[in-house]
Image (cartoon, rainbow, N blue to C red; front, side, top):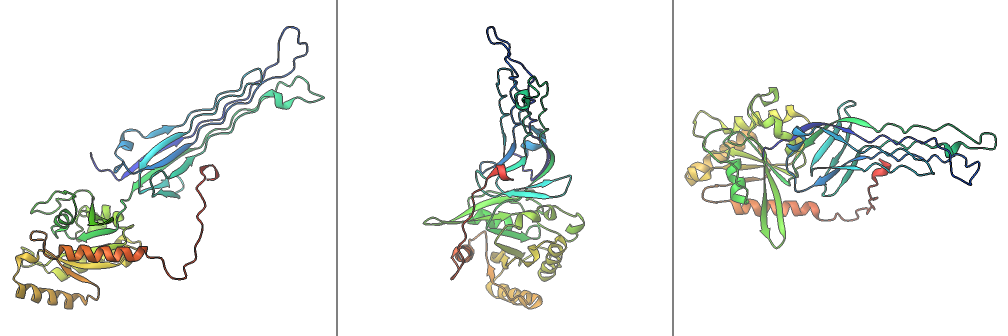
Length: 356
């Protein structure tokens, strides 16, 4: 299935049903009086998180989502039926924005989470509500109110614990394939990754984490070059970013330290807090160098970058260093989940879509 991470849709809640003007007409019942019932409320439009979905491609084909209208009121004080609420299933990780106001309505982050995006119209009143001692035959009823209509932008941001960042051919797809059961396309030419890939790294005994691979980012990406900038948003929810660097580039004129600086500059131009996200340096393709040559290039790179953070060296071909990296990532992620001492416990209120 084609990966689509952006879509524009229109949602329309149902209009409220109109009230009814009616008078009771039955044999042997003189002066029956007004008996027009109320209309029914219009149906809401609610987005629901679904972990079984991983793309917004369906919304490229169906852009209009309309809830049911409330039924009109009827005679004999019969009220109209409420319009059915329309539930629209979206992938977990979807951010919803109102195109007309540019307001971010919210995000769907859990399976089954509901978000009210269009409220149905209110019902109209029948003439039974307008009778009085001075007006015993009211011929007045009210119409139902229109349901809300909105133009929405859906933006899918994948949920992962660890994100891979690097130039094309830095070995990101090879690493995620080695660490997990994900099978991204791997080839000896740039831009083999055209869309994000997710892999689950299983460490045994119920311990696992999710790793995300995005297309490589190149110089000039902030001006639209390449594919990586379009997918940088998928790293915005990760807890940790692995900055992959090819320590043995085939082109000897390539300077790994300069590539790192270029990539950091593009990330900073992208904006947001991604540039401040914790980042580990991972040197890939270690198997292409002798140990002495590798150590020399490693020290030269770290000195040029003045790197102070964690550094790992891996080979996705031989598997060298991959297990050590996975163990370090698992321990680091588990440290996020440990409860802080003297933390204030707060009770989360249940979500009520009718109060949105």
